[in-house]
Amino acid sequence: MKIKIIAYGIAKDILQTKEMSYELNDDSSIGNLKNVLLEKYPKFEALASLRFAVGEEYQDDEFVLEEGSEVVIIPPVSGG
Amino acid sequence: MKIKIIAYGIAKDILQTKEMSYELNDDSSIGNLKNVLLEKYPKFEALASLRFAVGEEYQDDEFVLEEGSEVVIIPPVSGG
Amino acid sequence: MEIKIYNNPINVEEVEQYVYDPNCGGIVTFIGTVRNSTKGKNVVRLEFEAYVPMAIKELNKIAETIMEKWPVKKLAIHHRIGNLEIGEVAVAIAIACPHRKNAFEACAYAIDTLKETVPIWKKEIFEDGEVWVSAHP
Amino acid sequence: MEIKIYNNPINVEEVEQYVYDPNCGGIVTFIGTVRNSTKGKNVVRLEFEAYVPMAIKELNKIAETIMEKWPVKKLAIHHRIGNLEIGEVAVAIAIACPHRKNAFEACAYAIDTLKETVPIWKKEIFEDGEVWVSAHP
Image (cartoon, rainbow over all chains, first blue to last red; front, side, top):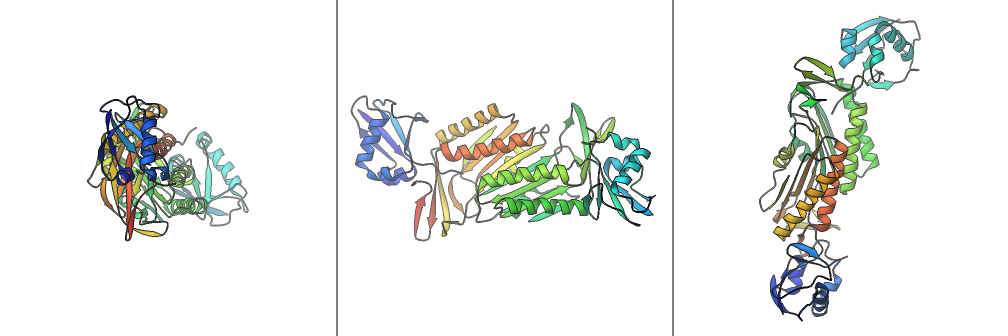
């Protein structure tokens, strides 16, 4: 299935793009996506945290993605 | 001996004057002055607190007054 | 540090700008305003009176204690006296610290202690009378 | 309550005026400014980026939690994004409570939580490079 990945902050630098589409196995979870990303972009390993949002909400590793899901990568935030 | 009393806030209302001179026994302390004032102006009894300052500093009951001392009556403060 | 007591309206922005420090990431401010009612009674206006030289001294003590207790870089306390209308600023305290936790603690300490020790008095004027605030238990 | 994220300079006075409540005796404000250095290195400017719709949602969650936990009357959080020069205001949080202790607690909670949960990122631009703040442990 195809999902869309949107990246902010340092995640955008690591992916070298703001948005990309990505091919994943059906019924993949956020956890599966995370593993795939960590393998393909080892720089994610070095971050202090790595969170993901779908539907403008943080989602945990168990969250199951579907065809067309938009997943936002949330590297360590630093507002304020 | 003669001292000067200066009053602020509700103390001014109770004494009905901002300043007055007052005759006290020699070597009277703040504590003695307080007793005299409480007797003469019983409304001071009703206050939440009654403090005294000499030389722009709070002084306790033991502080000994002298001829010409300027004693400021500090009723409960309410700044801010 | 900047300690002031005066009759004119307080410019909060000025107080905050005074403490701005390029090494500090944050400023915590407390702004005390004149409330429109006390125990359900409408306040028409307030009158603030201070024993100014001693009030300045006591405010300086607060500032010095803060400088000792917390790594405060800059601190300003402005207190107004005279007649104040509802909503006007009676006091503005601004504190800049490298760490915001300290700035919150120091600012709370400043206003708490000010209300205990600084010889300033306020009288609430109602339509049918007036009361020296906190005078009676 | 008023939650805003925008590109233009933050007018702190406006933020404070928004929360002014005639029933409250005090306003506590936190103003976050751009520091001139990090670990001894000179910062030239900062760039703030936000995932705006989610950041607004997360700021609203903070505001709602505060309204539940403390008797806060009014609350405003303005966060700036885009390019900021040294000394410019990145965030202003103002809170009005009947009791100042609550306002201090609520304001500290707001900025602490903002820094943990709200998807906003800042990049420090040095003369010889740039760093996403807090990205690495």
